[in-house]
Figure 1 (cartoon, rainbow, N blue to C red):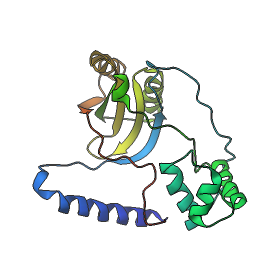
Figure 2 (cartoon, rainbow, N blue to C red):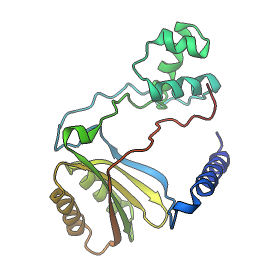
Figure 3 (cartoon, rainbow, N blue to C red):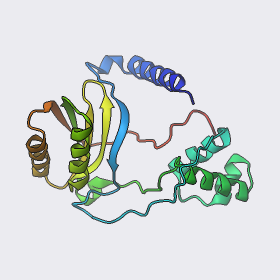
Figure 4 (cartoon, rainbow, N blue to C red):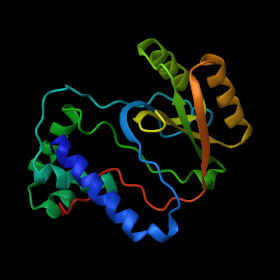
Length: 215
């Protein structure tokens, strides 16, 4: 999908959300993710293990609507047998298997992960929004290393918007939020202009692949 098409779709969805929820919204911010620094299933503080990586050949791969249907199914039920997926998209088992393998080797599918209910194991997810000044290559590499080594970081990305770094922390103690912020200030004493922290206490919806009516 072309970039302008993605932006057009995003604007359409945003307009719908703002229209449907206008009476409940006082303010909002939109951040566009430009780079992922790291992503984990569990924070290292809970379980530090080496994730098995899929074999990626980084070949240039073009996907069609059938591939998008496969991605949509896998985003909801990655453990679904191939024959069940094949039946849903009206392809043979071998054709479906080939398409999934092709998308893995092309780096479209990066990994298969479980969806964890962190609250059930007494963990909470916090979001830290950072506005950093002068985030050049050297500082960005230092930031990426800090986030990779930090045992509380679950997911972190670079953004475009009022904030340019977004970090998800998964902790069993709110004091660890303070420890992470202290570490950021120590490594970047003159770079952090502003920050905001939020706690996610209820998840309404999270989709790994948007449904554009492929199925």
